[in-house]
Image (cartoon, rainbow, N blue to C red; front, side):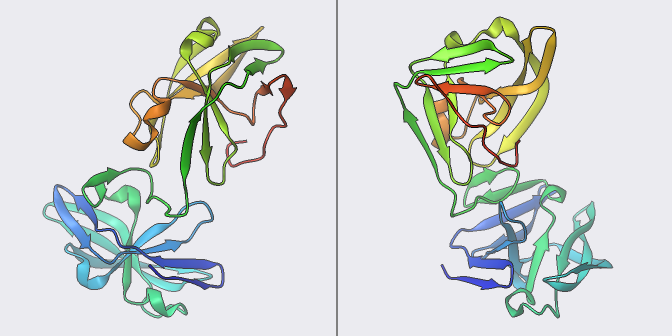
Length: 249
């Protein structure tokens, strides 16, 4: 893999085979996708025009300060049409992008890296997750009320994010938690369910979450509960931890 940076845009070639499907038909099948960091926290895939299998019908234009003027396309796959679901920068000041096509991730029904389905966004090759068993004493407080306490947490270290403390449900005051309808998806961990936490007369929405069926690389946190460090008080071996700043704060 090679990585280049053009201004604020990082570009890296991937060795993965990547496929996208719309209406049960492949719209792209590429053994040479390109990862482009349009945003700080995760990349998106661009594909050689020759790897696109769907019909692309021009339907408008778009502008990016860094990537230039784009042509947008309706993606036609059999009887399915996804408007403004693809774009291309044919005259981009970034030469590497000129012969590539990007698809709107959510406009395509399913994405696969090799033969594994991927959700939310492409996996960042620079992101790593380590899950370690620990004997640290972890106590969680919400408005002065202890809602969880354990000496057998699992610590999840994820690149760019604060450490997360995952505790067994038997060590959590489940009587203070109220299950919500919120569900989020992570390409590295899977689908998470959420709980609100009641402390005194206040109900704090979606402070805690758990992965009932995590992806294989995150099986160690299956069924355990974690709380947002950014929104609760966490004591580790008796020491109150500083609330971190993150996109989830």
